[in-house]
Image (cartoon, rainbow, N blue to C red; front, side, top):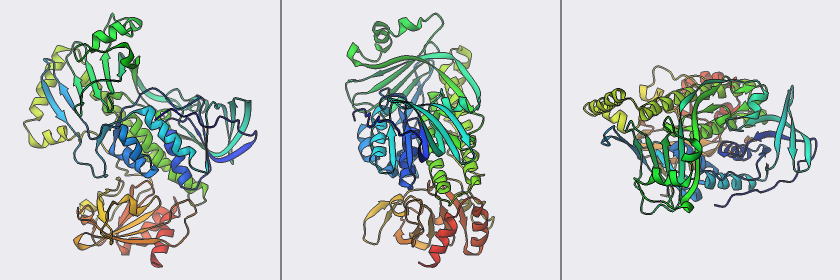
Length: 533
């Protein structure tokens, strides 16, 4: 999809919005579209003239695809994706030591796929521009941030010069070199790796790609190869002592590095750059009325392919909470749960990405021998092998603090474990006989699922939008997968971001509502509406 510049008209001096988003990368654009769908007035400010043209992130997870499904852009974007991919790791002698692929996803989409960031950004920008309560302004750079009791005043420099712009809330999605993070005095915790890499993105690669990335952990010059759709492919080569950065980016050097895999011509190179990976997380995600998301909040090594996915999780987690506060249905404490829920998982993912990098990058013969031997030994024990080959080392978010209610100990363990996790999205059958994904039934607001015997599932959902005080909608469906069988006889309370806030029985309804009332009014409105259904 072509890059988009959209509207670069100057914002009127002194204009105001509910939420301003700094940065029109995938995280900022996704947050903007979600907020608009919740009924919030949102303005995106981007200093560059258009969406990005560099294929930076390339791996996307099932949860991110689910968010794109919610935004209505997945169908078009998936045409430029290589869906359902895995990874192969090769040892010091070039031998295959592990083939890994995510286990079957609960969320209705492949666990791992490859995508094209310029295409996705353009589609997200088009989605934002199509929403009537969203404004997208390119060539608008935020140069100062002043937080006050009622909101934030921004100085924005655009094509017509500087102007003042106010917002009740600001979400800073302005990347790893975040101006907002620096202006707020929020530090980064972590380190930068010593090793540098050259990344080469190609087009016009012939043949049908295998659906596996390759990690060549050869101990001499480690190489990562990632396939893509439409003839796209990425190569990453670790720089060695004595390599000249400028020289290695020449076409001759790039052609020599890629030659063991296939020949290339000059026009095949989309991008070639030297990069160094960071493993850093912001000390805090909130300062007054300003919240950090995406790379402004965390910088991840690329080896686990989780950077963009963490940003989209941030957007989904934060958007509904900000929308609730804007509409008067959420408290300040609700916004504090954003950091409580997202920061621990970001730290875990940064650590995991760093560890995978250490496995890939090692040039020590002793370490590489130990690695190959250990991986082979893991394959002997069935449970360890399933853990490795099913990529279960990629921890999924599980909120134990935040806007969640600990489940009653009397419930079955499998039912208690639903709390704080992303809700499964099985295919369910409507009374009409049509099969749809569960998300199409529960909508984008609070929902209550009531599993019964033989796969029967009652769904009560609030209407979408921030002012959803209308009568709740009840739908009866059939779930033949048994995804919620452990909770038969109980109720599953689902947040707008499709995470489970609570699992409870009728006798625990009052306790559940009391716990959540300090955060938002959505659950109480849903259960009140349920009584009238």
